[in-house]
Amino acid sequence: MKTINALDVHYRKLNDSIDSAIKVDKSITLNNVFGQRYIGRGLPKGVKIKIHGIPGNDMSAYMGGAKIEVLGNAQDAIGNTMNSGRIIIHGRCGDTLGYAMRGGEIYVEGNVGYRVGIHMKEYKDMKPLIVIGGKAGDFLGEYMAGGSIILLGLNLAEGEEIVGRFCATGIHGGKIYINGNPDKYKFGKEVEKVSLTDEDTAFLKKHIALYAKFFKKDLSHLKLEYFSKYMTVNKNPYSNMYCSN
Image (cartoon, rainbow, N blue to C red; front, side):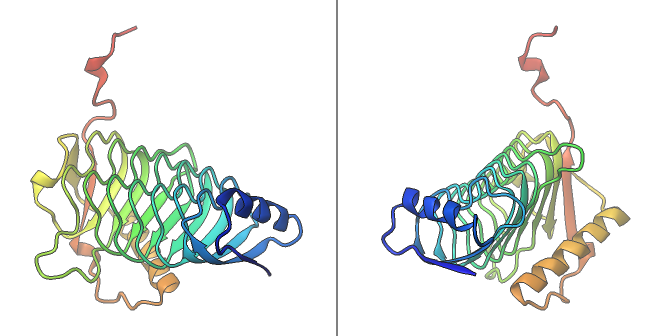
C-alpha cells in the first residue's frame, strides 16, 4: 500500500501524486489531509484510498468505481456527479453531499448539511444511495430524480429535529426513508408519504446492516416499522412552466 503525506501539499500536486501512484499500487493511504479538493475525482474501479484528515470540496467528483474511506469529517459537494463506487465517512459531512449523483453509495456516520442529494438521479441499474447516520439540514433531496436516501437520526438530543425544512422540494423521482414521522410542514408540496412495502423493508435492512458494519455500531434497537417513506406525487412537477411541443 502506497502512503502519501498530504501535509501542506497543494491540491493539484496531491492529485497528481495520486494519479501517478495508482499506476503502480491501487491501494493508497493519504495522511494529514487538510481541505485539499478533488481527491478521488474520476478514479476507476479497483482503486482504494484511505484518508486520514478532512478532504475538501468535490472529493470523488465523477468517480467511476473506486472506494474511498475517510477517517474524519468531509467538506462540501462530496460525490459530486459520481457514477459508481463507495464512500465511507467516519464523521460529519457538509452541504450538497451527492450533488447530481448518478450511481454508487455514500455512507456518513454523523450529520450532514444542507441540500444533500440535490439533483440525484438514476438510470437503469445505476441507482445511487446515501445513508446518513445523524440528521440532515434544509432541502434534503431537493429536485431529486432518482436513487434513495436513508436518514437514521442516531444520537439526536432531546427535541433535536432529524431533518430540516423544505425536504424533497421539487422531487420528481427516487425515495427518501426517514426514521420517524417528521411534521408535514417540513416537506415540499411535490412529495407524499407512502406505506413501506416488503421490498422497502428488505432494502432498509440491508443498508442499515452495512452502515452498522462499516461504523461498528449495534443498531438492533432500530425498528424498521418506524421508518417513513416519501416519494413524488408528480414525475414532472414543472411541466406547466414549459411550452408544449
